[in-house]
Length: 160
Image (cartoon, rainbow, N blue to C red; front, side):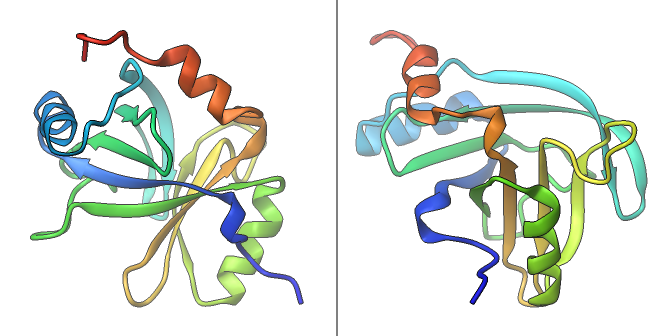
């Protein structure tokens, strides 16, 4: 049986936050998390309603299982549901198109991907099921060794 997702490919839980620095500080004080240096990028993103340029600012915990904090972007898919900031489960995949097809055959609908000319899906994609469960599938080629990436980007102790 072909599964859309594999448990061993789950590598982070994404949480939308209104203030990235405050959320990092709170989780560090609460659970001892250390963080990579925050990443910010502006790209065109395609949703079911069209394409627009958005800026995303994210940070991953150094410790596993990884927590991904995403700075809220009002009016975009990066908006927290009232009373619930958990946004998605992030899975690596070796084939975005095949995984997307399997998600769709299991009742998930497309929400967003990077808009790269000539590609239906690029870099990552969000899919949502009728219950509101959001899954992010991420091209494994972006982070062939995620642990090494996290360690290389880890903020120094005493920093963020």
